[in-house]
Length: 154
Image 1 (cartoon, helix red, strand yellow):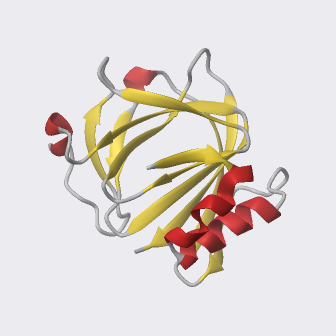
Image 2: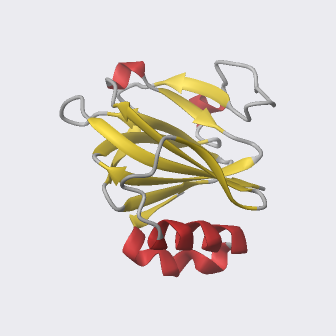
């Protein structure tokens, strides 16, 4: 997992050409007025723009993907994101079967042990297949956010 400001995106270009293309796209594109929906950036790189209200922590569930890396970028607003790693004991136990079509599997619900960070406007987070993540949590009060999620096929 990586969390940083988009102004530091250049530090991560050498991770892969797809991550570089994704971060350059986020750095150079004004997404403030981009409509909700999905579009293709390049082969194996799809971006989705979503607007939603953050939720209470007790509504959160950890998720993971096997076929995609998530690059999440906060366009407007801020949210808390819970995280854990597949190697962390109790989080190894899925709460659902893996959905191959949607490339998602859910794990444990939020609890007091769940680590979190705040993704603020202009920040991005990269979640690899070994990273469990729980996006969309509010940290002080419910708020509306606009976020881009890029899916990079691995």
